Length: 88
Image (tube, rainbow, N blue to C red):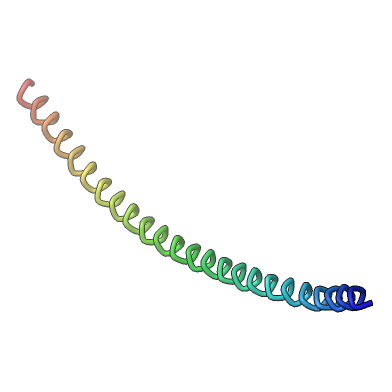
């Protein structure tokens, strides 16, 4: 009879402990998932800032290159004009 009572109490104990452990595990997993989402959002914001900064630097570099190319083309054109005038 005491063995049956022991098994019954053990079953009730397990029935009470298992849901508590499952709830605890799920709350920890939920917290970790929320932290992961926050970290991903933060990383996305940082990436957007870096991309915007890089885009601005590339735009500036493109403008400088365009001005430099225009100056070089003007110099070549002037040199060609002078050679034609000298050759004529």
